Length: 290
Image 1: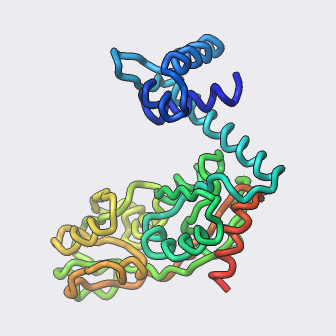
Image 2 (image 1 turned 90 degrees about the vertical axis):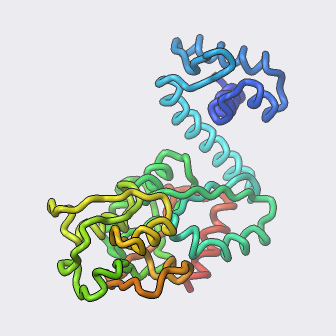
Image 3 (image 1 turned 120 degrees about the vertical axis):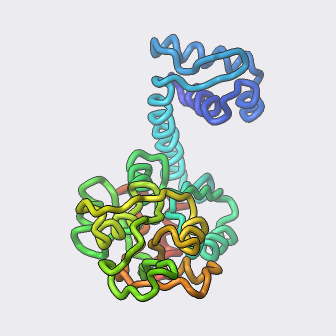
């Protein structure tokens, strides 16, 4: 098992096609097929399921892919750390709200100053992003955490470091029917629009609305803040979002809101992760905060 074979398997898993993986890597399809078959023989398991020209990953293949991505990430990290290069790829995770309202300008600044570094940005809930940073699928991520020594201590205990970057004011957006509510317990609507489980903001809303304690609520899991605002405007639910996102949207004027306090967005990374591209990225956001 060598790194080149792992890169081939990673390409096949990404493309789910021998032909497309071969084109991506500049190889002939027969070479890709042979290398994957040798890898399967070495591991003693079937990694891909072939149904005609269609390819899917087996259960073992899906599990193996996670390790492959971690090994390739460590290989790239080691190469840049030793070589001192600021090029390569920096994989950045972000909450949807941060990607929309906070990142465009600083990412553009970084890109202009570091054109040799390719930035890859993906979004997800904070819990998922933290897991992906820990296992090497992401180099760093912007996540929501309470600004406290306990929060930073919990990062250290799981092999991460973090720096507070932005404070976000959280709002509970209410439909017109609940415009007179002055506290969460006065809200009549019993449905919450939110991202999937693992979203820190959703957890705060569930706690403040009594959902976590078994209140009679339903959860509408939606994939974007625009969809959540639309659902609130339709009168079917309430939703939680940062003020920075609301200010970017065109929410109807008759939607009321309650303040739910504030929370801190942290930049997190693996302890000891110090490749040049990330150091420059980190320094940019420390400057932003200052």
